Amino acid sequence: DGDISARILACSPDGVANRFAVVGLAGCGINSNVPGTYNITFEVHNSAGLSSGVVQRSVTVQTRCSLGELLCNNQVDCSVNGVCVEDLADTSALQPSATPPTIFLRSFEFLQPFVDVPRFSVYAACAKGVVPKKDAMCEPGRVA
Image (cartoon, rainbow, N blue to C red; front, side):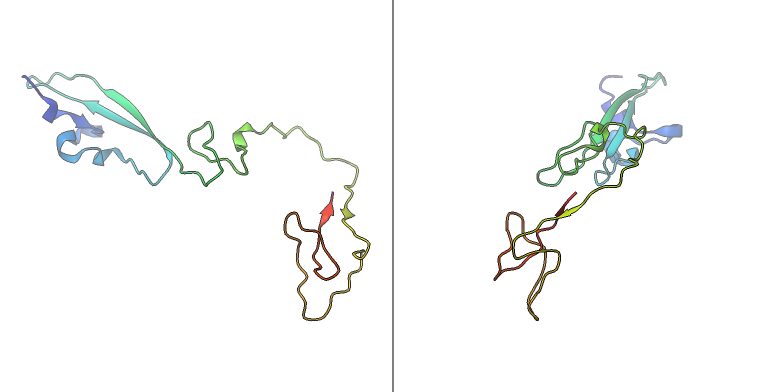
């Protein structure tokens, strides 16, 4: 038969003739907008109807992770704050503590549990690394 590349079928279930030379991978259901693993099958028959057998390729569409995040080992999910969920230890066996948690307010000489804030001024959480000052009050948070 010579070169029968034009007869190669790609992802042709149930005898649907998806000729690779004509439709490419259109019949394979690959959506590059959706992360996951897709299987592509190729097969060709000669003029006598004999099959090459099915050859398969696995294609993984990877997630594009945000800046600073990593692609996890499953090649689909991105880390959150640099941690992949699949890498976390199994915590299902942990029992809740019978001891109540303790929380402490961060305080300064002029910033105690009661705070006087001048009217029309802003009182919000302190930016990271900023400590409150008498003329620039902000909430330093707490420690638990």
